[in-house]
Image 1 (spheres, rainbow, N blue to C red):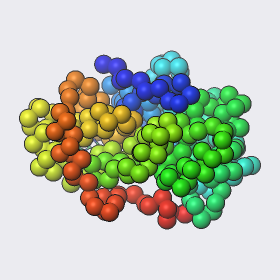
Image 2: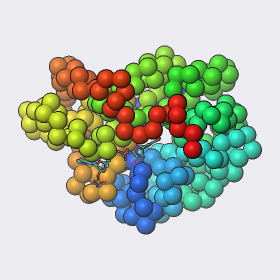
Image 3: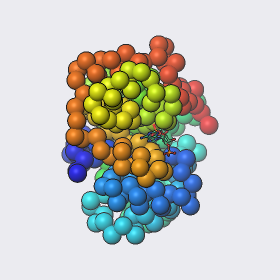
Length: 278
Ligand SMILES: NC(=O)c1ccc[n+]([C@@H]2O[C@H](COP(=O)([O-])OP(=O)(O)OC[C@H]3O[C@@H](n4cnc5c(N)ncnc54)[C@H](OP(=O)(O)O)[C@@H]3O)[C@@H](O)[C@H]2O)c1
């Protein structure tokens, strides 16, 4: 099975389904990523702060898969934001990954109190203009943050990677992205495997289709055009989460899942980007 590619705003293609490795210890990362690559995933999402770029790189090196068939994302950590610090941080990530470039480099959080994300974006643009990275983007940026980047008049972020799952849609952010051709990539797409997987609405749809709750939720994302990067260290789940292209949800199914959003952003699992300044 192949994952459909999604063209980013600079024409670079990203597989719509990838594999996340947040909270996977470095020593366990090679095994998890090797399993994912064997199943067929070709996009891997890591970050400097995850401390597992070496494990990702080891799995890639051992896989024998041609580099051009892979799509590797990593992220600049908050303390490395800045005009002079961005390139060295990128190079440190490349050294750990054992790669000469990544496909997508993201600013991990805006950290608005530090107010360095604009100059950091300009440093990201320099990396991109020099051909050191195939696409650049952001993560956890809210409309106010995206507006300042777009108003620079330079490179528009290819991706904004944000928390999205049935309990939290962040429609203001995804609408801004749609308007400016910034692809939305959903993190914690399964709401970290919590109660949502047992919700009767999800369980009923899964039962009717002969699918699992996780597959139904991933399908909800995919049919709305989002990129998804579910994480698992469990081989059966790694396969289960990949097998989401052989069925369709109806418009009624999508609407029923939409109805699970908690009011007022109460479904948020991770930090609020407006407040997260560590
Ligand atoms: N940019 C950011 O700030 C940010 C923040 C968070 C995450 N991310 C990225 O997004 C990726 C995904 O998010 P996430 O790891 O937070 O959460 P997630 O993918 O929504 O959920 C992962 C959790 O769900 C469990 N799970 C996975 N598949 C399952 C299935 N089919 N059935 C039941 N449980 C299942 C996993 O357990 P096992 O592993 O034990 O199987 C794990 O505990 C991360 O790995 C990371 O790459 C980015």
